[in-house]
Image 1 (cartoon, helix red, strand yellow):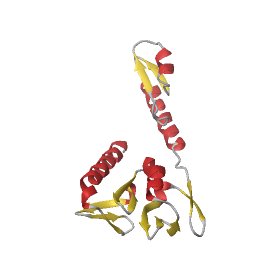
Image 2 (tube, helix red, strand yellow):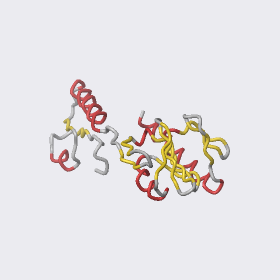
Image 3 (cartoon, one colour):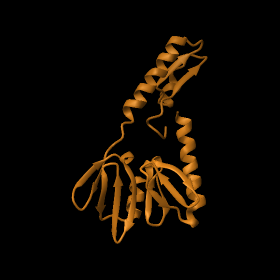
Length: 166
């Protein structure tokens, strides 16, 4: 399994539980399926996914404080005059990071670079129009013309994945 949050329920017409161990199955059911047991397994899997996927906080050092913040609370990072502006739901902070270092750290949390000076959280994008990125916070960020096609493709893939999850 690549993702430990994935819950596999194996349904087979032979009562051979060996496959359940091979695939790290969450549950194993032999046919014919008992409807009540099936829905109970689904409910259990949903419960475990929702409780185990609690978002972890990340520590960021700013010029004034150490932020212990969830990636979902960050709107974007902006490189400006040798400093990085960290725009969050709580406000803006300044830090001594490179966007390359931040990109490596936040890429798993759906942050992408629409412009050489920005790293944006895809979850906070309301829409993209032309070469402007409109965030839920009301801020408008630039989209570099050279990166537009690639960035829009990444954003569309992100939206598709979110839609499939619901």
